[in-house]
Length: 524
Image 1 (tube, rainbow, N blue to C red):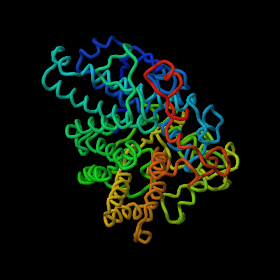
Image 2 (image 1 turned 180 degrees about the vertical axis):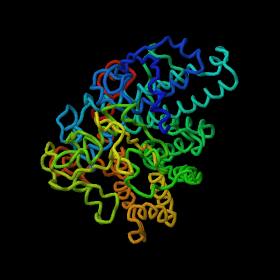
Image 3 (image 1 turned 90 degrees about the vertical axis):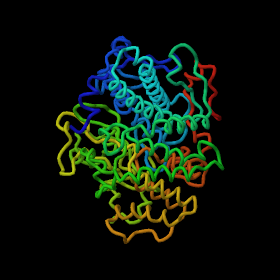
Image 4 (image 1 turned 30 degrees about the horizontal axis):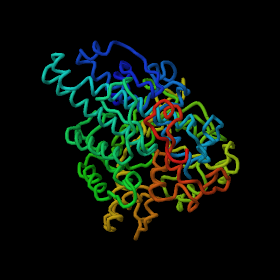
C-alpha cells in the first residue's frame, strides 16, 4: 500500500486541539483529549491529522467540518494557498478568475484583508496549533503517567520528532511569507494569553535549533514510510532556509556554506536519484519517483480536496484542451504562464520541461480573464506513466498526484548556487549540468560557464509552479522594483515597479486588532 498517510490513517484521524481566540479558527472536537491520548494506538492517528493538515481541508473530505472558518473550504488547502501566494505575484503564472483577492495577487496590490493571505496565515497557525498540542500530550511525564511501555514511548517519541518537523516547516512558511509573526510552542496553552510577536531573525534561529535537535533522530530516508518525514526532509528544509538567509537575516548574513553542507547530507545518503523522465515526477503514480524527498500526499479516493494538485491540474486546463487527456473531467480555465517565463525556455523543442499547451493560445496577455491569453502549463497530470487514469477519474476531478515539497533536483540547484556563491564554480557547474542532462537527454546543452542569473533561470525552468518562485525572485532582488517586470506586475498590463513592502505579506487585520502584541508589517 503506497499511501500510508492517505489511506487507513487519515480516515481515522482525530482533531483534538483547540486554537487560540486570536487565530480565528474553527476546530472540531472529537473525543476528550485525555481519553484519546491515554491509548497509545491513537497517537499515530493524531499524527496523521498533522500530516493531513498539509493536504486536507477538514474532517469530511472536500466539504464538511472545515478546519478554517471564514474562507471557502476548497480555498483553504495548504498547498493551494501557498501556490497562489508563491506563484501568482510572479512571472510564472497569472490567473483569470475574479474570485475576491485573486486579481490583487496577480497585480501585487493586496492588502491585509485579502482572503488568500488570511487563508494561508490561518492555515499555517492551525497547523502549528495541532503540532503543539500533540507535542504537549506526548511529553515524557505524560507518557510515563499513562503507564505506556518502553517500546510504546520510543515509538511515540519518534512521532514527536516528526511533529516538530511539521511545525518547523509551517513556521518556515510563516517566516518566509509574513516575517515577524505570533509565536507559540507546546508550552503555551491555547486561549490563556495573546501570543507575543517573534522577530524574523529569532524565528530563523528557532527553526534552525528545532531541526538540529531532531535531525539525527528522524528515520533514514531509505527506511521511512512514504509520506512521512525523514532526516533528508529536515535537511532539505534547512538547506532552503540557509540559501535564503540574507532575506530573513539581512544583507551580509549569508549562510551559503551551511546550505551546501545540508545539501551534501542529502546527496551523500544515495537514497535519491533524478527521475529519468521529468514528466514522471508530476504524474498520478509519482509516489514511485526516486527523486521526491518529502511529498504532500493526495489520493483521488481517500484524500479528496479541491485544493492541492486537484487545483493545480484543473486550474491549468481551458480553451481547446481536453480534460480527459490529463486524467480529469473538468477544466477550470484559470492559470496560465506569462511570456517572460515562457521565453526562459530557449530550446523549447528539446527541453523536456517545456510542457506548454499552445494550440489556440497566444503568448501575450492583455486580459487577465481570457484563458487563451498566455500559454497553458499542464505540468501536473492525473495519468500514470503507463497512460492510465488516476483512481477517481470517472466520478470527480480529485487526483492521485502528490506534491513534491522537496525533491532532489531542487537540492542539486541549491547546492550549485551555494557553491557558486562561495567560489566553487567547478562543483556548481557539475550539479547544474546534471539538471541540464536530464532535461535534454544528453550533454549537448550543458553549461560551460556560469553567471549568477543562470541559477535563477534554471530554477524557473526546473521548479516552475512548485511554490518557490516568489522566494527565488526576492533572493535575487527582482521581486519588487522595476529591474524586472512581467505582465500585470503592479497592475499594468506591461508590468511596472512595485514597492518593496510587497516582499512580505501583511498580517491579517483581524489578528492585529485582536492581539495588541502584534505590529503590522511596514506599509500596510
